[in-house]
Length: 474
Image 1 (cartoon, rainbow, N blue to C red):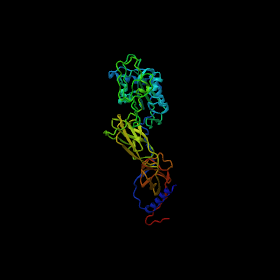
Image 2 (cartoon, one colour):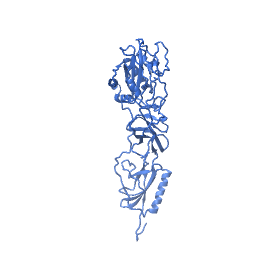
Image 3 (cartoon, rainbow, N blue to C red):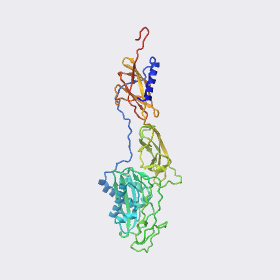
Image 4 (cartoon, rainbow, N blue to C red):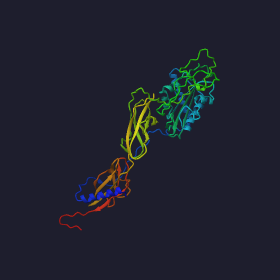
C-alpha cells in the first residue's frame, strides 16, 4: 500500500468518526452487474497499410491497365498510341526493384545511375529522347494515373509528342517499412506499391519525326516531402555520338534544322531529360496563396489519452494532395502522408502532459496551407483511492469513498465482493453511496478520464451500533 493510499484511508476513517450518525439518505445504489462495453479505440483505422494486391499475380494486369490508360489519354488529345518496349520495361523494372529493395525514392539509382544511364544498360539503343514518371503508395492503376495526369510535368510526359514507346513496371513490396529515404533526406513509408513509366524515342523507330525533348519536370511522388530539393533543370544540345556527355547551358530548346541528317544523331544520355528527382509539392512560394486551413482532432473528440498511439481525424479541402504532420511547428520536420480522413499517429514520447500535433496540407502545385493543430493530454498514471464501508443494518452499508487523480481526474468506480472486478460495470464516481446485497468483504477500483484503471483495493469494513433512548450500549 502506497503512502498516498494510507493517507486516503486515514482521512476516510476520520470522516466516518465525525459523520457516522448523520450521513444523508442513499444517494446511489451500487452492485455487481455484467459489463459489456469497450473502452478501446479503433487504432490505425485508415492508415495506409499492407492493403495492396498480392503482388506478382496482379502485376501484368496492372501494367497492361496503365498502358491502356496512357493510350486512351493520348487518343483523347489527338496523339498516336505508345508501343510497349521490352527494353524500357526492363529499365523500369530494374529501377522499381532498386527503390523497393534499397529503401529510397528517387530518379537516381542506388549506384548513382540516372535515366540516361539505365536506358542503354537495359538495351534501349539509338535513343534520342527519354522521360520517366515514378510514384509510390497508390494501390491501383486508376489512382496513380489520375495523380500523374493531375500534375503538369507528368501529364506532359504522358502526352509528349516526342514519345514513341513506353516501359511500365509495377513493384509490390509486402515488407515495406517506414524507412524509405525521400529526396531531401526525409524518411517516409511504408508505401508497398511502386510505379514506374519510362518513355523513349529511337532514331531507328519507323519514320517518326525528329522529337524535341520537353522541358517539364517528370518526377511525381504523391507522398514525398513538402520541400523542394534545388535541382538543375536539364537542358540539351544535339551532340555527335562520340561527344563527351555534358549538359548544355542553353535555356531553351533549339529546333533541329530541316536539313538535319536522316540518322537523327542521338543526344548523349546526360543531355536527355533524365528528370532529376523533385518532390511533387514544389517549394512553397513566397507569393501569398489563399488556402484554407484544415481541421484535425483525436478520434472520439477526447481531451485525454493514455497511450502515445492515437488515431487522428482529419478534414481537408478538396485541393489537398498531401498531409503533413509533425511534433514541432516547423513543416520541414513533418512526415508526409497520403490524404485520409483518419490517420494513425504516434505522439511525442515522454512523461504525462500536453501534446500538440501540428498539421499542414499541400496542393498539387506545391502550395502549403496555414498550420492547424490539435492538442491532447497524455495521462498514463492511474488514479489512487480507497473506501470505508459502514454497516447500517439489514444488509446495507454506507460507503465513504475518496480517490485522486492529478491529471485527467477520477471519472468512474466499480465495487464488488471479489477481487476480480472485470465483469462489474463502471458507475460514475461518487463520494458517498448506499450499498446493498454485498457481504462484509468488498473491493473497489477507480478509472480516470483517460481510461487508466487503478489497482483493486480492499474496502475497509466498520461495524457500528447506534443506541436509542432508553437502551444500553455494550
